Length: 104
Image (cartoon, rainbow, N blue to C red; front, side):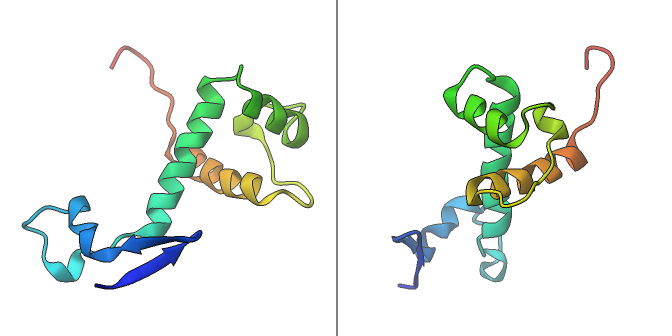
């Protein structure tokens, strides 16, 4: 049974079938870890947009984007690893977000 290691925990690649349909050929059943990680960070970015009263948001706002909105934040000198990762998702959010007019 092939096992990988991520942050001290083992990943069981045999159970990766959970992410895929039974019709998906085995050659295509690889876990796109980069995309998955980016999606989780995108989710944290969305929490920053929708929950501005949380302690985490207030700490990050004070340190990394005190004068602008989260969506307008920039990557400054010497960012923490966490902020650098969330900023990577912010770049993806900017590319994927669209304003919608109307009620659709």
